[in-house]
Length: 253
Ligand SMILES: NC(=O)c1ccc[n+]([C@@H]2O[C@H](COP(=O)([O-])OP(=O)(O)OC[C@H]3O[C@@H](n4cnc5c(N)ncnc54)[C@H](OP(=O)(O)O)[C@@H]3O)[C@@H](O)[C@H]2O)c1
Image 1 (cartoon, rainbow, N blue to C red):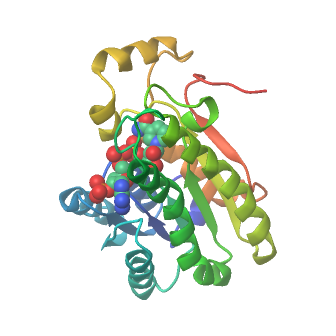
Image 2: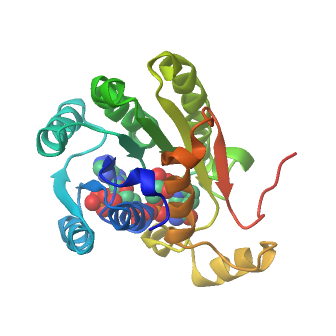
């Protein structure tokens, strides 16, 4: 147990059928939280995360395409009926979808990237807001180091969408502060999850690890640790801020 204040909190983690979301869901359960495990295409992944959640606490499995207004609103309703409210919303679901250059990308690809990585945060947050107002809860959004440096080859449109996560977080922090709701984000570097199994060769991953000052790529748990910190009272005076979890791959003054 690391964060005593998280015990009994109701936490909805989008995209917790895999990777960073799954690790976060399990870590919240370890603190004694009631966890909403959300999936879209990978039901078995969601079921596996929920099984692990239930080894420590309680939770519920939720399905939704995070781009779809109706499905997201139903997901939030289902969660709040089961949990009795929401204390923490982790907007983690997101995807690179494919590597496409600006020159080769279709309009459909561009819209899909923004719907998956930016619209998703708007829809889930708006649906959860009445509940977060009651609980004086908080929000953690997931960006990417790509949002700082423009991304690798074919990841420019994704990078721009992830940069929008930073500004969305600041704007939400301002708008929701009068409700005592905090909003922060985490910007991961290269994290070894299914994401890079699909989009990055083992050679490239090795090369990036060598270029990283801490000489390794990140784990989903590295990112989950930052998410839990921001969600907990340890971060009670932090809002509109981001934590970069990238092993020093990209540092800023
Ligand atoms: N891995 C990295 O190096 C890295 C770096 C920077 C930022 N990030 C960001 O971190 C977040 C988690 O990524 P990850 O590495 O954990 O990847 P991952 O293992 O591929 O997991 C992605 C999660 O997002 C969900 N998702 C994707 N599209 C969705 C949609 N349309 N509707 C609902 N859910 C959707 C997936 O659900 P289903 O599989 O059930 O469809 C899955 O649970 C993403 O926002 C990603 O952009 C990752």
